[in-house]
Each structure stands twice: as C-alpha cells, then as structure tokens.
Amino acid sequence: MVKDDEKRIVQHDQKAKNILTFGLSSDEFFCTARCKSEKEIWKILEVGHEDSVDVRRARKHTLVSEYEVFRMKNGETISELQTRFTHIVNHFFGLGKMFEDDELNIKILNFLTRTWEPKSQ
Image (cartoon, rainbow, N blue to C red; front, side, top):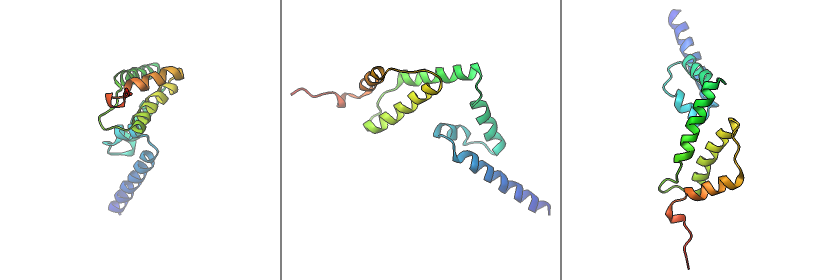
C-alpha cells in the first residue's frame, strides 16, 4: 500500500512538472531544467516573476547588456537575427522601455556582418 502511494505521488509530481514546463518560454525552461520537483520549479518561477524593484532592475540590467553586445552570429540568417533581436526588444517593452522604429532599424543594420554590406558596382 505504501509503495502504491509513493508511486502515485511520483506520478503526480511528474505530471505537475510537465504542466508547469509546457507553457514556459525557452529562457524560463532552461532556468528550471535542473529542478527535481514541481515545488522547485514553482519557487524559481515565483521569484522570477516577482515584480519587485530589485528584480526589475536586474532584468533591465541583463537586457541592456544583451542589447549592447548583440551581433549577428556566423552563419545566422536575417530571420534568425530578427527573431533574437525582437525577443530582446519585447522584453524591454515588458519593462516599460520603448524604442523609436528608426533607432531599432539602425541597430539592426549595424548588427549585420560584413557579408551583408552593400556591394558597389
């Protein structure tokens, strides 16, 4: 009887972990991938989604760093570059930082590798 109860608890824990991780973004998934229980996952998500001043400041600092060092990777397509860039910009929007379209367009053009520079005729 005890083994059946333990087995059921393990099954419920696994189901809860699957439900929690199914709706996570890739960033959140990687932050919680090493968690052994749904309680650990929940605790990490709870802290990460806290809307305290310190958490918002830390998120903004991380995003600024990502934005500043953002460059096109070798072999990366324009579409992949745009997806990564949009991901960063959308996180800024979530924190209340807005950008002018002109500023974003210039940033993208500056991120392109030399292979994308216009060729003179």
